[in-house]
Image (spheres, helix red, strand yellow):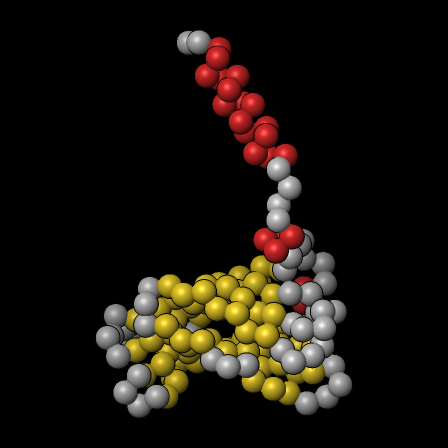
Length: 146
């Protein structure tokens, strides 16, 4: 075995590992998957990342997956923001009938809690069903690694 390819591979790995991660990719906390209730012929799933709760505008982002085999059923995600000054507000929903789609939902101010709701969506009736919501609070993620 020649040493040149091995040394080249080690050098390439070292350089790649030392390159700083862009601020946009490093920002945020990975909450994980949120899935609608299963049943019928599948479910919807969202892989969720959230911004810091101290941010002036809170962002929920990630990928939305349609895992339902029924042609008229799609994946749906929406966030309900509980504002620090009181009151709540819903984001615009994001839907997809494709296998995968990126989404970004943002608040209108600083929040103290967010409920991320993932459902199946019936295109014909324009109704959601088989929903599940995760309540995300700062105290839950206080000691999570970033």
